[in-house]
Image 1 (tube, rainbow, N blue to C red):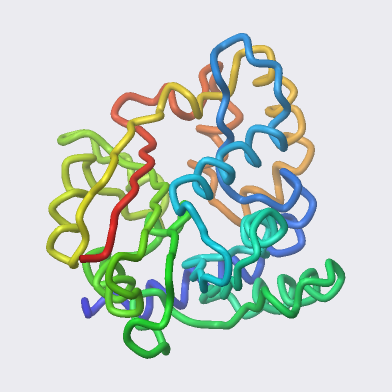
Image 2 (cartoon, one colour):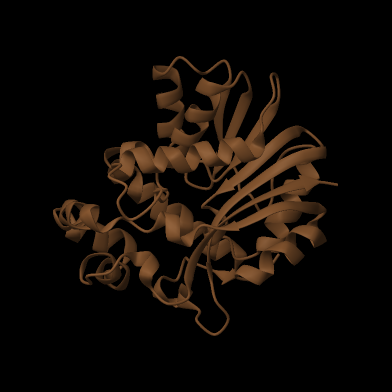
Length: 270
Protein backbone atom coordinates (compact mmCIF):
# COMPACT_ATOMS: atom_id res chain seq x y z
CA UNK A 1 0.00 0.00 0.00
CA UNK A 2 1.38 3.39 -0.93
CA UNK A 3 1.79 5.93 1.84
CA UNK A 4 -0.69 8.29 0.17
CA UNK A 5 -3.41 5.65 -0.04
CA UNK A 6 -5.39 6.26 3.18
CA UNK A 7 -5.62 10.05 2.84
CA UNK A 8 -6.39 9.83 -0.89
CA UNK A 9 -9.12 7.24 -0.30
CA UNK A 10 -10.66 9.37 2.45
CA UNK A 11 -10.64 12.39 0.13
CA UNK A 12 -12.37 10.39 -2.62
CA UNK A 13 -14.96 9.22 -0.08
CA UNK A 14 -15.60 12.80 1.04
CA UNK A 15 -15.95 13.98 -2.56
CA UNK A 16 -18.55 11.35 -3.39
CA UNK A 17 -20.33 11.73 -0.05
CA UNK A 18 -20.93 15.36 -1.04
CA UNK A 19 -21.86 14.41 -4.60
CA UNK A 20 -24.72 11.99 -3.85
CA UNK A 21 -27.58 14.48 -4.25
CA UNK A 22 -26.23 15.83 -7.55
CA UNK A 23 -25.40 12.33 -8.75
CA UNK A 24 -28.99 11.22 -8.25
CA UNK A 25 -30.24 14.09 -10.43
CA UNK A 26 -27.97 13.73 -13.44
CA UNK A 27 -27.55 11.20 -16.21
CA UNK A 28 -30.25 8.84 -14.89
CA UNK A 29 -28.01 8.20 -11.85
CA UNK A 30 -25.07 7.05 -13.99
CA UNK A 31 -21.76 8.69 -13.13
CA UNK A 32 -19.80 7.60 -16.18
CA UNK A 33 -19.46 8.66 -19.80
CA UNK A 34 -21.77 7.80 -22.65
CA UNK A 35 -21.17 5.82 -25.84
CA UNK A 36 -22.22 7.18 -29.25
CA UNK A 37 -21.96 5.41 -32.59
CA UNK A 38 -20.75 8.49 -34.49
CA UNK A 39 -20.84 12.28 -34.59
CA UNK A 40 -24.42 12.22 -35.93
CA UNK A 41 -25.78 9.96 -33.19
CA UNK A 42 -28.63 11.85 -31.56
CA UNK A 43 -28.93 9.67 -28.45
CA UNK A 44 -29.31 11.51 -25.17
CA UNK A 45 -26.56 11.36 -22.56
CA UNK A 46 -28.78 9.09 -20.45
CA UNK A 47 -29.24 6.61 -23.32
CA UNK A 48 -25.55 6.74 -24.22
CA UNK A 49 -24.53 6.08 -20.60
CA UNK A 50 -26.77 3.01 -20.50
CA UNK A 51 -25.15 1.84 -23.75
CA UNK A 52 -21.75 1.95 -22.10
CA UNK A 53 -23.07 -0.10 -19.18
CA UNK A 54 -24.49 -2.59 -21.67
CA UNK A 55 -21.07 -2.93 -23.29
CA UNK A 56 -19.58 -3.72 -19.89
CA UNK A 57 -22.25 -6.34 -19.27
CA UNK A 58 -21.41 -7.94 -22.62
CA UNK A 59 -17.76 -8.13 -21.60
CA UNK A 60 -18.67 -9.91 -18.38
CA UNK A 61 -20.86 -12.42 -20.27
CA UNK A 62 -22.76 -13.15 -17.03
CA UNK A 63 -24.32 -16.56 -16.47
CA UNK A 64 -27.25 -17.58 -14.30
CA UNK A 65 -26.45 -17.76 -10.62
CA UNK A 66 -23.09 -16.00 -10.81
CA UNK A 67 -21.90 -13.61 -8.11
CA UNK A 68 -20.62 -10.32 -9.54
CA UNK A 69 -18.55 -7.65 -7.75
CA UNK A 70 -19.07 -4.01 -8.77
CA UNK A 71 -15.85 -2.23 -7.72
CA UNK A 72 -16.78 1.44 -7.31
CA UNK A 73 -20.55 1.13 -7.56
CA UNK A 74 -21.68 4.77 -7.28
CA UNK A 75 -25.35 4.83 -6.36
CA UNK A 76 -26.03 1.54 -8.06
CA UNK A 77 -27.36 2.25 -11.56
CA UNK A 78 -24.98 -0.11 -13.43
CA UNK A 79 -25.59 -2.85 -10.83
CA UNK A 80 -29.35 -2.50 -11.33
CA UNK A 81 -28.90 -2.61 -15.12
CA UNK A 82 -26.95 -5.86 -14.77
CA UNK A 83 -29.35 -7.49 -12.30
CA UNK A 84 -32.47 -6.56 -14.26
CA UNK A 85 -31.12 -8.18 -17.40
CA UNK A 86 -29.47 -11.26 -15.90
CA UNK A 87 -30.31 -13.64 -13.03
CA UNK A 88 -27.14 -12.93 -11.07
CA UNK A 89 -26.25 -11.66 -7.60
CA UNK A 90 -24.44 -8.30 -7.49
CA UNK A 91 -22.38 -6.88 -4.63
CA UNK A 92 -21.43 -3.24 -5.08
CA UNK A 93 -18.70 -1.53 -3.06
CA UNK A 94 -17.72 2.10 -2.63
CA UNK A 95 -15.60 4.07 -0.17
CA UNK A 96 -18.43 6.61 0.07
CA UNK A 97 -20.79 5.88 2.96
CA UNK A 98 -23.52 8.08 1.51
CA UNK A 99 -23.33 6.38 -1.88
CA UNK A 100 -23.83 3.01 -0.20
CA UNK A 101 -26.75 4.31 1.83
CA UNK A 102 -28.41 5.83 -1.24
CA UNK A 103 -27.78 2.77 -3.42
CA UNK A 104 -29.25 0.51 -0.73
CA UNK A 105 -32.43 2.61 -0.59
CA UNK A 106 -32.71 2.45 -4.36
CA UNK A 107 -32.29 -1.35 -4.29
CA UNK A 108 -35.22 -1.61 -1.88
CA UNK A 109 -37.32 0.70 -4.02
CA UNK A 110 -36.50 -1.40 -7.10
CA UNK A 111 -37.38 -4.65 -5.34
CA UNK A 112 -33.88 -6.04 -5.96
CA UNK A 113 -32.57 -6.54 -2.43
CA UNK A 114 -32.71 -10.33 -2.85
CA UNK A 115 -30.00 -10.11 -5.51
CA UNK A 116 -28.31 -6.70 -5.21
CA UNK A 117 -26.62 -5.28 -2.12
CA UNK A 118 -24.10 -2.54 -1.41
CA UNK A 119 -21.30 -2.42 1.15
CA UNK A 120 -18.73 0.18 2.14
CA UNK A 121 -15.31 -1.16 1.20
CA UNK A 122 -12.07 -0.10 -0.46
CA UNK A 123 -11.30 -1.92 -3.71
CA UNK A 124 -7.61 -1.73 -2.80
CA UNK A 125 -8.25 -3.75 0.38
CA UNK A 126 -11.35 -5.91 -0.06
CA UNK A 127 -12.99 -7.66 2.92
CA UNK A 128 -14.00 -10.77 0.96
CA UNK A 129 -12.54 -14.31 0.98
CA UNK A 130 -10.37 -15.61 -1.82
CA UNK A 131 -12.21 -16.93 -4.91
CA UNK A 132 -15.64 -15.75 -3.73
CA UNK A 133 -16.88 -14.06 -6.94
CA UNK A 134 -17.51 -15.22 -10.51
CA UNK A 135 -17.02 -11.84 -12.26
CA UNK A 136 -16.17 -8.22 -11.49
CA UNK A 137 -15.84 -4.81 -13.08
CA UNK A 138 -14.18 -1.46 -12.54
CA UNK A 139 -16.56 0.92 -14.31
CA UNK A 140 -14.67 4.23 -14.37
CA UNK A 141 -13.43 3.74 -10.81
CA UNK A 142 -9.75 2.79 -11.23
CA UNK A 143 -9.15 6.42 -12.18
CA UNK A 144 -9.50 7.33 -8.48
CA UNK A 145 -7.24 4.58 -7.13
CA UNK A 146 -3.63 5.50 -6.45
CA UNK A 147 -2.45 1.89 -6.21
CA UNK A 148 -3.97 0.38 -9.34
CA UNK A 149 -1.75 -2.75 -9.28
CA UNK A 150 -2.95 -3.45 -5.74
CA UNK A 151 -6.61 -2.97 -6.75
CA UNK A 152 -6.15 -5.40 -9.64
CA UNK A 153 -4.43 -7.93 -7.39
CA UNK A 154 -7.30 -7.67 -4.93
CA UNK A 155 -9.79 -8.24 -7.76
CA UNK A 156 -7.81 -11.30 -8.83
CA UNK A 157 -7.70 -12.60 -5.26
CA UNK A 158 -11.48 -12.54 -4.78
CA UNK A 159 -12.25 -13.91 -8.26
CA UNK A 160 -12.41 -17.60 -9.04
CA UNK A 161 -10.08 -19.01 -11.73
CA UNK A 162 -11.61 -18.38 -15.15
CA UNK A 163 -13.68 -15.43 -13.92
CA UNK A 164 -14.03 -12.40 -16.14
CA UNK A 165 -13.01 -8.85 -15.26
CA UNK A 166 -14.23 -5.82 -17.25
CA UNK A 167 -12.52 -2.43 -17.01
CA UNK A 168 -13.67 0.96 -18.28
CA UNK A 169 -11.15 3.69 -17.54
CA UNK A 170 -9.63 6.98 -18.65
CA UNK A 171 -5.99 7.05 -19.72
CA UNK A 172 -3.37 9.51 -20.91
CA UNK A 173 -0.67 9.28 -23.55
CA UNK A 174 3.01 9.28 -22.44
CA UNK A 175 4.17 12.81 -21.74
CA UNK A 176 0.61 14.17 -21.65
CA UNK A 177 -0.45 13.48 -18.07
CA UNK A 178 -3.63 15.50 -17.63
CA UNK A 179 -4.37 13.89 -14.24
CA UNK A 180 -3.04 17.01 -12.49
CA UNK A 181 -6.32 18.70 -13.47
CA UNK A 182 -7.82 17.17 -10.34
CA UNK A 183 -5.90 15.85 -7.31
CA UNK A 184 -8.17 12.79 -6.97
CA UNK A 185 -7.55 11.59 -10.52
CA UNK A 186 -4.59 9.27 -11.13
CA UNK A 187 -4.44 8.31 -14.79
CA UNK A 188 -1.93 5.96 -16.43
CA UNK A 189 -0.89 5.49 -20.07
CA UNK A 190 -2.85 3.03 -22.19
CA UNK A 191 0.22 0.82 -22.46
CA UNK A 192 0.24 0.30 -18.68
CA UNK A 193 -2.96 -1.74 -18.44
CA UNK A 194 -1.95 -5.04 -19.98
CA UNK A 195 1.26 -5.41 -17.93
CA UNK A 196 -0.63 -4.50 -14.75
CA UNK A 197 -3.36 -7.03 -15.49
CA UNK A 198 -0.91 -9.79 -16.35
CA UNK A 199 1.11 -9.13 -13.20
CA UNK A 200 -2.09 -9.29 -11.13
CA UNK A 201 -3.03 -12.71 -12.49
CA UNK A 202 -5.19 -11.96 -15.53
CA UNK A 203 -5.01 -12.81 -19.22
CA UNK A 204 -6.19 -9.91 -21.38
CA UNK A 205 -8.87 -11.01 -23.86
CA UNK A 206 -9.58 -7.63 -25.45
CA UNK A 207 -8.46 -4.02 -25.17
CA UNK A 208 -10.40 -1.40 -27.14
CA UNK A 209 -9.59 2.29 -27.34
CA UNK A 210 -13.10 3.79 -27.62
CA UNK A 211 -12.12 7.44 -27.20
CA UNK A 212 -13.86 8.42 -30.43
CA UNK A 213 -17.11 6.82 -29.25
CA UNK A 214 -17.30 8.58 -25.87
CA UNK A 215 -16.95 12.08 -27.35
CA UNK A 216 -20.26 13.88 -27.01
CA UNK A 217 -21.63 14.54 -30.52
CA UNK A 218 -21.51 18.22 -31.33
CA UNK A 219 -25.31 18.74 -31.51
CA UNK A 220 -25.61 17.55 -27.91
CA UNK A 221 -22.67 19.49 -26.48
CA UNK A 222 -24.45 22.80 -26.07
CA UNK A 223 -27.44 21.19 -24.37
CA UNK A 224 -25.17 19.29 -21.99
CA UNK A 225 -23.04 22.37 -21.31
CA UNK A 226 -26.15 24.43 -20.59
CA UNK A 227 -27.41 21.82 -18.13
CA UNK A 228 -24.09 21.78 -16.30
CA UNK A 229 -23.86 25.58 -16.32
CA UNK A 230 -27.16 25.85 -14.41
CA UNK A 231 -25.40 24.30 -11.43
CA UNK A 232 -21.91 25.71 -11.99
CA UNK A 233 -21.30 26.71 -8.36
CA UNK A 234 -22.22 23.22 -7.19
CA UNK A 235 -19.88 21.65 -9.75
CA UNK A 236 -17.02 23.95 -8.73
CA UNK A 237 -17.49 22.97 -5.09
CA UNK A 238 -17.41 19.30 -5.99
CA UNK A 239 -14.87 19.03 -8.79
CA UNK A 240 -12.82 22.22 -8.67
CA UNK A 241 -12.63 25.27 -10.90
CA UNK A 242 -10.17 23.73 -13.37
CA UNK A 243 -12.37 20.69 -14.08
CA UNK A 244 -15.42 22.91 -14.56
CA UNK A 245 -13.46 25.19 -16.85
CA UNK A 246 -12.56 22.22 -19.06
CA UNK A 247 -16.17 21.04 -19.11
CA UNK A 248 -17.92 24.36 -19.61
CA UNK A 249 -15.59 27.07 -20.86
CA UNK A 250 -14.28 25.53 -24.07
CA UNK A 251 -15.96 24.78 -27.37
CA UNK A 252 -14.54 21.26 -27.48
CA UNK A 253 -15.64 18.04 -25.85
CA UNK A 254 -13.59 16.84 -22.87
CA UNK A 255 -12.29 13.92 -24.95
CA UNK A 256 -10.91 16.29 -27.57
CA UNK A 257 -8.22 17.14 -25.00
CA UNK A 258 -4.84 16.00 -26.41
CA UNK A 259 -3.67 12.80 -24.77
CA UNK A 260 -6.97 12.02 -23.04
CA UNK A 261 -8.52 8.67 -23.89
CA UNK A 262 -10.97 5.99 -22.81
CA UNK A 263 -10.43 2.24 -22.87
CA UNK A 264 -12.59 -0.86 -22.44
CA UNK A 265 -10.79 -4.05 -21.39
CA UNK A 266 -11.87 -7.65 -20.91
CA UNK A 267 -9.63 -9.98 -18.93
CA UNK A 268 -9.86 -13.48 -17.47
CA UNK A 269 -8.53 -14.64 -14.11
CA UNK A 270 -5.86 -17.28 -14.58
